[in-house]
Length: 157
View 1 (cartoon, helix red, strand yellow):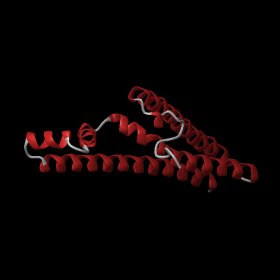
View 2 (cartoon, helix red, strand yellow):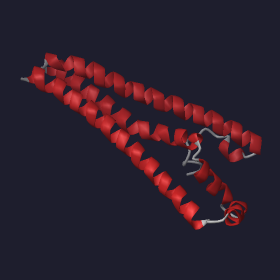
View 3 (cartoon, rainbow, N blue to C red):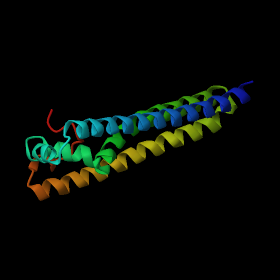
View 4 (tube, helix red, strand yellow):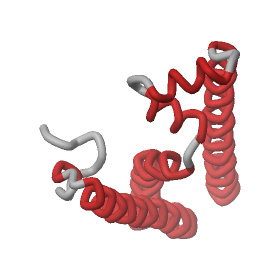
């Protein structure tokens, strides 16, 4: 019975993970499209939009309208940490179960643990790339606050 339930549970976990990540991406794109539609509705003329861009907060408006991929990349690595930690801990749990009693848990332990570690490594690489890009942008603008090695959102605690 365990030989059937474990692989099915693993596959169900993978399917749910992919489904949840796909739905979150779709919802994020829908929210971005709504924001753009609201901006278009609010600024019906080109002059009004031009004044809004030149006014305070204009840079943010341009970033919203441009939907920069750079911002998307900056939000990816924190989103990878949660699934990475969950899958890594699940892999460790399967490994402990394999050590304790059940031989059938070795394969899920290796597969789930490897996926979790792979996601953790991907999150780290994305964080390092962002850190390097932030340092280069801070040096170009003369902004010393981004030359430290703290993740975004943790500038000064």
